[in-house]
Length: 345
Ligand code: TRP
Image (cartoon, rainbow, N blue to C red):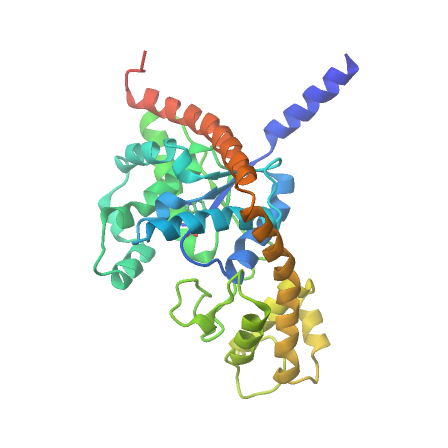
């Protein structure tokens, strides 16, 4: 009897945890920017929140993908999530296309989203410029699908980088508009601003975000780069002509390297500055490489081990899809009812 009460209390407590949702596209290589800016933070968040981590393959096809590569990238990203320490017992980890509700809700949300709103999205405009030969409807509708991801799970918090703020703002507008038109249906999500929300910039141009789609391979460190590649890329990283390892607006390249070092060595930027006081870039650069390699090597080893165990990965995906589907379906049923659809008998 007493045991049962305790159990009920813990269950209740779990139910009250705030819902957190985030996702990464399985397109191309995942960089240390994705790791520091997203996955690394998720590891701590999954302890405190009812966390849902998605692999957003439906989003990925809005730019042309080679099907065999998309498939491989999806497995790689799943194995990477797990190798980094995302725990399928604590969090819901799944592939977006496994839960059809995402596409279904997106359709309904399309009817409360204005073309003008989507036309104004900066990322849409950027992508139109970069993929002028493939300005497809999916590219334009990308933010509505993202709103669908978030709203389906009655998400409270969405950890997003600066480049996704506008999309999250639109998700909030869509939720509020639907709620006011049809009655309260969705939780209106809030952005989660990470305490250590470091943004990693390109190693070749500290004014641009480190991106996996950069044409210059030296601009980013991929999570699967070998120690030699990592050392070489840091060696070639652009620096200023000053020699001091100091953080500051006047030293964007060195500030970026200090941010990377502190994220991987597990210290503050101030501690890193102290550590390299009086040392030149020739000393600093190989030490950054060492710190990054020390973190990546065990992750890469584990990722490789997991990729060889497809049976296990499939179990994770099946369980994740089931957990996600159950919750998503509940919201979608509610939405269909509000819209006036006759339920399927
Ligand atoms: N658009 C996000 C990105 O490129 C990925 C994404 C899709 C996402 N759906 C999401 C992020 C929902 C947070 C919540 O980074």
